[in-house]
Image (cartoon, rainbow, N blue to C red; front, side):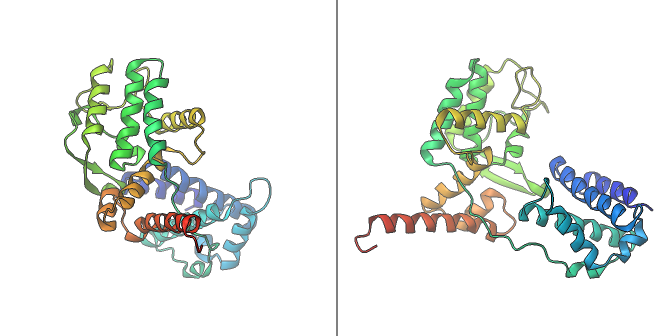
Length: 303
């Protein structure tokens, strides 16, 4: 089989069997398609399964070096992501087609510096909610935007999780069952402020919010999309003078950081966020420790 046919099979597997998110599938397809395109020139013809099984580490290193050059050169994090996609593709080839190539495991990606999450401040989160309500041209749209921001900040939801809510979820309960990454479910308690904000939006919304219809609606009644939420946050942070890091996901970061600052247990926060590994949640502890040290350096007479 050609590499392109194997790639198509793999993408179908990720979509139909593994139920990966559309954005993840698009990223995997782009990265591996770019790799196969490079091999066509590198090997002098379209690669097939046998060619992929025979590749040497130097061939993969040549591709990674190629992606670091020219106007479209990739940053270290993108190179690391591309390498991860190729490795995932090869794991599939080995399981489904017996095309093993353990030599490629010798290739190491760039060493990445782990960055700390950049949350919105408490004041910033409050200002975003208030500005969303005031800025919209129609009252129901302002209520929708304020409800969405409140829900993400109050419950630590991913934007995709908030937008996956349906009309049948109304009225929102005190504890919400959320299906996160990989289909993993978790229970998230909802503050009354979040439930009230969503209830106000539902009462004002001109579209029927019932059954499997999406809870959050766009101007013409269709589903409100993640891209719309990103555009909303970009508009609001511009009006409020907030940094470019003030994204919908930064509200999720703020949920975790503010809980931790108030004495929340790290394990409990891990469960609320739906993190698979505690090390992911520990980034927030590192951020809070950094803030404490900065305050110490500013205030201590011997600092």
